[in-house]
Length: 331
Image (cartoon, rainbow, N blue to C red; front, side):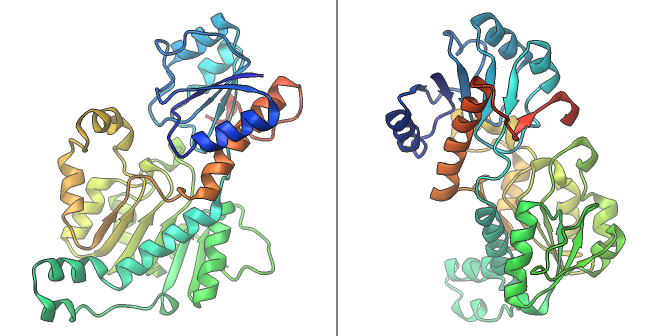
């Protein structure tokens, strides 16, 4: 097969090279995003990773060049116009789960950071205030009630980790899992908000979930609760969260998927930072921990992202079933 790989990072190259060596496939790699301007040659399929939109014109250009398959190397597909892909006869797939453990572990790391007030401790130490740094009393995860929103692959791994800490776990999901080794209580949305000391989000960024955590939801949360978002950028209303932090009704927030990250991504590439006062305001708060969408980012996950994407292209090309195929009905 001839495969065009777009949005390639340095950490992905060894796995793409290894695939080519093992299979004999020709894999042309570029760090550039997939746009109508960067697409100029035909191939059997495209493997791609980017958070900026895939414009309808991309699919028109793929059709014109005889390229019928696009395999994302990531899970999220909110930036893919699946209707346009279908219109031009392009089949699209994603990688539904490249390492649920990576994201679940990252969520726990954020919880522990906030529970022990590590940000405040570090701020005091940077100010050479050793005495005050020792006054920030923490809370133990095992003494908390944790609300898990979404019990898919990541949510289930998170529940297992929380079980190990001894935390009480509540879960909100229309279809909770029936796994004997998972210890949790399914609850409705109001109960989850009212009883959780920590709320962790693990649902897709569909239109129905847009601003799932808004001012109304925050008003129903337990005073002093923590909020963790390693899910999708649009799940929380960031302005409402900042207002809750100002009012001290929300004790802390961990954000790996920032609400405005997609629109600012190209500017970040050009300027080396977010041109976003809201981001800077969050970054300055000791009870907020920000990270640049890296919860998934482990060696295991990167290998799985690359190889799953290429396996999907093989399945498309040879007429085999592809469980990860995305259709317009999912949009």
